[in-house]
Length: 441
Image (cartoon, rainbow, N blue to C red):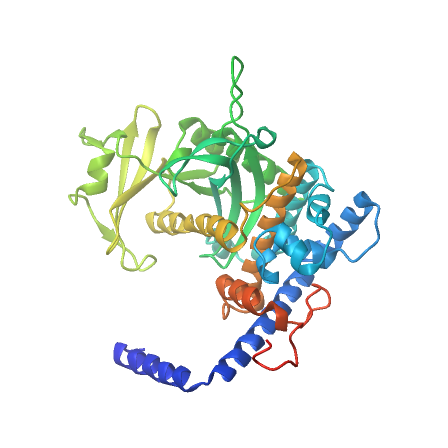
């Protein structure tokens, strides 16, 4: 579409929106909220995990009642016009201790196992579909592992989980809970599936060994997930794992290459020093700023210039460097151990890293993960795992059920503001204002 045609179409839509009356806009928003609730319920039915989860929690609580709507309410408080669980109970007329009972019903190991099982059950059919294709199609298999950690703001000494951590998003040290997440990105963000999660404990005071750091957590997560697929009879191709510069550890890179024949791609730092084949020594800062490189272009990454370099490092050994220059973006470089994988494929894999940041933003802002006050470690795990599942359900709803016509933000915003007009028996949503006049509504 030409720019002139696009501008004319945009202005026509703007005129059409202005012509709508307030009642028409309200009716349209109500319909969109009802459509979003129906799509969300369809996604829950497609994925199938709420029924099993309800049965398991009912058994632990020794109570037979309608829990699906309450579990969904704990996963998505904004869908009910609320932000915290306490506000949710007040609005819905539930027992104020119900969220704590639901979240603490399962031990933390069961919550994590449930999240891992969900990831495997979602990814296995996708892999079997790809495995039935030709070898050339499988070689272009777009399945990228992404690992990262994020700090969820908390204060106090709750259960020994709260510590002081560096936040890359806010560029300062925060008091909170540090969670490490491993996701699988299908294609260029078609689907983002969480496969493992862990909460890092702060180092204990006084003498003693420090707690496990995020490098060892990521290594254990990758080993465990690959082993889980192997137990299901699935031999995955060598994985491509992308992470930020904090995970650029030579031991982790070698472990991934030696154990899984995989590639760990990380962003390089300005302080790294490399020796090029012609004997020149370059620092990472030169790779981030200089334009004196053998630039290439590829139709696989349109609009991007890149330079592929082979170098050696005292820490990493022989490495492959990809210097990337994009319009209106700062120049940067990514690195991995020496590999034959093409530069465009590495760049495309690296571009999928931002989807894990998208997951964290959804958890923190749309699903209000920080708004949790419970009294047990199991309940904290339940809270975070349920919100992770909720984030995946939202992604599945917007990308698969709604075919990309509704974004996650639109679904949450619509239901947050118009939940009173939505009917959904399974989700315990009742149209409280249906049939009333506009002023009363």
